[in-house]
Image 1 (spheres, rainbow, N blue to C red):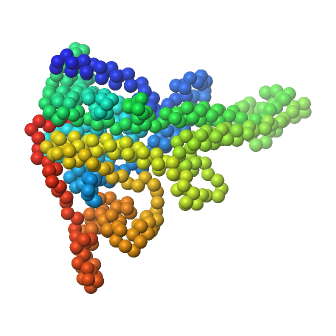
Image 2 (cartoon, rainbow, N blue to C red):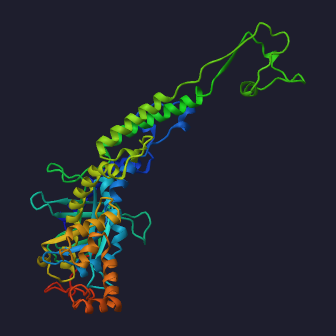
Image 3 (cartoon, rainbow, N blue to C red):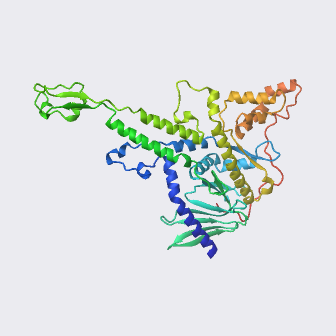
Length: 468
């Protein structure tokens, strides 16, 4: 490696190490592992076991990620999803891996997509998801494209040794640390002209392209709720049960029939306190139990603030009334959440589209043919099947506005499901007979779905691919 490459590794490694404390805190909030001691509270040792964590951050993040489902990619001028790109998606198990990428981006503000050469099938690139805890990238502020990226890992053949992969526009370099210095172990001259890494950014701003965690806005409220719950636990332990008092009594009065002293806990929990003869001057009474509603009211106030800041419906946070809301009211309460997910899908879709274009460079395809590429997302709203079917019928208005495949897509069926349904329709002899009796040839709607193979986008392998 030359000095410029070594300097790039050192610079990115320092930046990645500097981010480590922040990623640890973000992980702790998502996993519900942040402790009250970390919030600056002096907790008595006897109360440490009473601390409770309110995991609102995880619920907020999961509520968004659960509505982020990619269902395909569509090119300009095509009404069906692109078969080649969807094949790549399925080959790389991105149905599952994409959820991990979206989750990492929501938790840490960013995730990374690496696109590399596939030794088993050169016509299908490898697309992997990387965590910002082990990878970092820098981008050109003008083009917003990644100019260099670094991924740290531990080689399988040498435990305790740190390895790294440096991604550059023309080369991918593998190195391991030996005696405190980076030593190159492999190099791939891919000559792509672009770094085979795409950053998936959450909550980016013009002044901050690195993104922010989605949990930032409710971390303080979560800490406040945790403190209130700890106080509630302490009050339950000390004051929830009515406490009795006995004045003017001597310990000798608390003995059983055999003359043995009665344990304190037994005297405290006894349903009937009997004072033996000679205890005429003893007074017995009971304190009122503590009213714990003030704690629950404070927690409800915090929950209302979380709902206002995040757009989460109040019933997600356990705030409900005796009269349940109607279905229309529930869907209306989710409007802000749905719009937020749509905005995030737009940003994430750009990252997935860029990853597919890099995959075309690696496999020898023409990325220019995919400039107008659209990511197809599942509807993040929650309408019922009946409502969707009714909407499709009304939009058609009795006229062929929607063909059969488009109607099935509007109903929320996946591309694979649509393909199966269309094939079954084409093979159904009863439907063919009805079409013939109606004077229709059925050629438009009943033909099986054929794979689309567009002009110059057939991959043909590459001699110098990028390494993942």
